[in-house]
Length: 366
Image 1 (cartoon, rainbow, N blue to C red):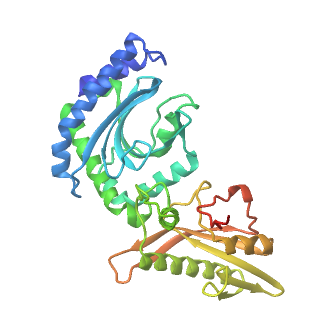
Image 2: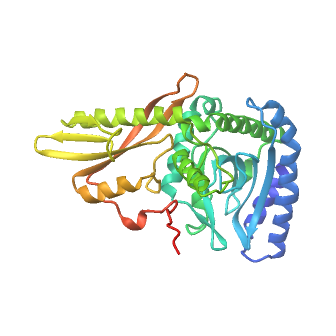
């Protein structure tokens, strides 16, 4: 494997988007050399991972149409990351200038749009990586030689910056100091074991899916109401878990508003908003949303028709409070929730182009 990594890095210095002889050789090394070596390690990964997984797999890519600036080969669970654009995995990333290669624990960082891969917003990708580092910190500290940031030296318009943002932790191997076969194998086994642990805890800490469970639930229910079966539902919440998250979000929101001097009444059971907040002559209609996922500027919430109507009508005397990164404890009966990070939007103007209908009621009339 050491020689394979060296040869790919040397060919990186001859990179071209065209299928030149050097790039053809690079492709053979990535797909037939590096990927094959990774497949040989799968029985060991399956045996040594602390969380049992039966669907370890390997994928490699060096081109999507044009030759990629940063080729890669990854190890993953087929059920938890059925595409390199989704979920978490361990991957070899080759520096664009051929000076280093990284074995990285990272996430899907792009989406397939209009015949090419488009990177997701870097802010959200970084936040998810940071959240993963936090929940994995005890395990990652066992290897002080890990780095939290990688430098692929790829052009800004490529996927290289997204790969950098999406990395949780990585082993860095420079061309001039590539480690032995034994070290490469041990490093792979270690990161794969961390990955298996992340797969196990991801649903609890809000890192299971790129789409929040609340959004998945709404999409599934909309399809079900229309008589459709939705595949690939990802992680969903049951009623007890939803209640725990909602109660935690309302508690965090109430504490914030009380600290701001408001008298707060929970009206969620009877009104189309959650909290009635009053301070002197001021009255606010407050919407509260809770989620286990990491919040970013590209995140989404679910609103009912009545909620939309109310907040359009009451603006600017309204507020949106989002409590993200709530920790759900399923070991308790019923489940409990704790933590949470608060985002405050006040006043909250609903922008109609940002609303996406999930389903329609249609009157069938002749």
